[in-house]
Structures are given as structure tokens and as C-alpha cells.
Length: 275
Image 1 (cartoon, rainbow, N blue to C red):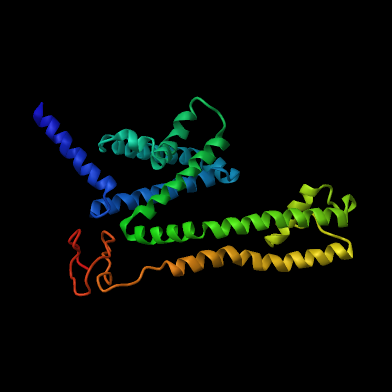
Image 2 (image 1 turned 45 degrees about the horizontal axis):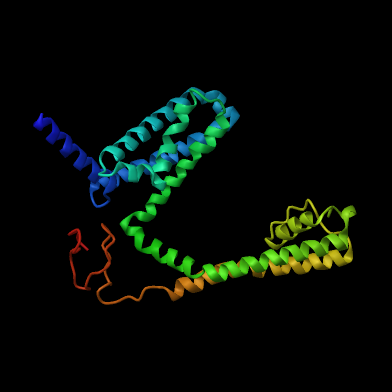
């Protein structure tokens, strides 16, 4: 009995290293396999919505989806049994996403509505966000996160300004153009203001009076400058918060992402990988 238990423990330990670790060859291959599986599953979902393609290859698409679902199911179970506190993983953001990845095909036996399940299956793309937790990308993702947090106040003020501006512009256009030009209400005018300010320009509503066209021209020109504001705010914070390169940070380990190494270091102090 103890021998079986020891083998099981060894299996759990090795599997945990492969699934949760990124500093081994097997771990990297596992991540690449999952990445390909996620992209393939979303591709299958998209092809199923092409009626001509689905009519010709429906059985193959269903078979492929079942293979993908079984792979995700095995991975989900392995993640639960190889971690010390399974409930923490199950209730985590990525745990819920992993569960969503396996549910649609099983629920299709009991609930109809393939279009709804297609959308749910497409949510598997959210699993790609795990890549930001990879050691090689973690440092950069933290830098971007810090820049966005630092820009939060300025962006909120900008959004408040835009909210007020669209209400004023939409209201003015409603008064100028009136219902005969398609501006049947102030909310409709606000919709036109948002579409015009963002330079989308659907063309479903457009001013016909000279004064309305003059105001529309002003809003269009203003839209180009408005688009650049949030980008400029975040870019300025990103440049300001750029970490200073020190002598001890001149080398980055491509294996584990550690960046605290001296210039003359040949091996990573954390994982031993050659720099």
C-alpha cells in the first residue's frame, strides 16, 4: 500500500512541475501544447459558424471538439489533484476559465442552443492571459500594470470630460438639426457625437443644415486629438516609470526571467541556466 502511495506522490510531484512550472523543457512543451490547443479550439468554433463549411465537415469538427474537450478535462483534473489547496485553484479566475473550457460539450447533452455554447467556448482565449505570468514576460507586464495604475486618475478625468462633451454636443445637434434630419432625441444626438468623436462615422445619421455641418466638422477635427490623449497619458507614465538599468540588472535569464545579475555573470543565480 505504501509503495502505491509513494508512486502516486511521485506522479503528483512530477505532474505539478510540468503543469505549473515553466523552467523545464517538459513544462515549456506543455505550455506550447496548451497554446496550440486553445487556438485550435477557437478556430473550430469559428469554422462551425460558417454554414457551408460546417455542412461539409460537421462530423470532423465535432470529433475534433470532443478531443479538445477531453484534453482540457484531463488537464483540469490534473491541476486539481496536483496542487496542495485545490479549492484555491477552483475558485480562482483561471480556475473558473479552465472549467468554462470543458463545460460546453458536456452541457450540450442536456441544453440546446449551439450559438450560446459557441460563445462560451470562444472564452477559452482568456486562458492566453496566463502568458503574462510567464517569468520571461512577468517583469514587462508588471511595468505596464504600474503605468496603467499611475494613469488611472488622469484617464478618469479625461473620460469625465468626454462624457460631458458628448452630452453637450448631442444636445446642441438635436436643437440644430431636429427630428427631420434624423436626430429624433437627445440620446440619438449623443450617439452621433460618440460615433463622430471616435472617427467611426457609420453614416446612419448626418447633419444637413449648414450650422450642423460646421459643428460636425469641428467635432471631427477634435476627434483626432481626443484619440491621442489616453495613449499619450499612458505612454508618458510608461516612460517615467521605466526601471533604471543598473550594473546588477544588465543580464536577464531567459529561462526564469530573473534580472538581478552582474554583468560578468555566466549562470543564473536562481535556476542555474546559462546567461
